[in-house]
Length: 375
Image (cartoon, rainbow, N blue to C red; front, side):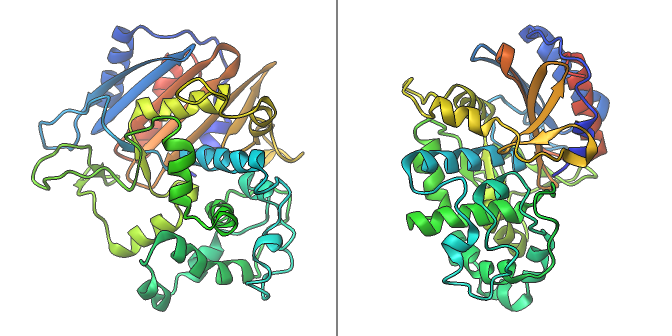
């Protein structure tokens, strides 16, 4: 995950007040101009009311401007969505927080690393499982890549035997960020429900929350010669078409539960954030129980992240300043960057999306945090 260490040093001040739309626009324009970003969407929510603005271009070198309705890839900020899906199925009794990898997969993968068979889905979501992301790299052989592509679900299943039998692990209970861990959690739901992860997310989150812009993949234009959606950019600032090398697409689809392959506009992302904290669906019905809401906003494990005092819950980095907690996360696939910060006691949310990923983006996000009172 990009910027984890940076995040741990932030948030020394939490005297946040919602910004006027005029000042929010000035801030977005300033961040784009000062740090030479292609485009940016910036938003604040106070008491469920979203104010968002857009600045910059969909693609450098082209005149089309970014709009607040444009879709952006949110990367690892999607992890909170995966965790919420698991929570929904815990409520329904399909799975428990202490359901283990072995409970679900040992019969199919008898060669599973014994150190992993008792790892729970809660530990996977909190990055406390001991799973090593190196396992994914070791699993992606040329021969395997040739067989991938039938469907994301079947591709995830094809990887499980190699990933779960990989011998190198971290100490279980220590924090080690793991995209593979989230991918295994998604595969556990697939096995128990006999449905693809993408279908589970669509049926249980996107549709109930009316997240109509949410897609699995990068924004794509109907006409490749028209810049009708934001284009991703290389770190040096070169715009790229939505498609990417086939091998990268295959890996991103496999990592869908970890946030490798999902885009949406800011309004729909905000719908999820509000539902994640207040538990209501689009019709005002109870989406999550109070018990579940408390659970998914609690830190897991007694050991802090990198001795910082900061913790991780279920798709959220939890930062404590004085008596106040804030919940935050960043996401990037190397071409897009997103960030969410939520202050539950005042129901304030800051959302940022841009179509580039580099050190200038990090500085732009720092500027926004500072000028909105979070840094």
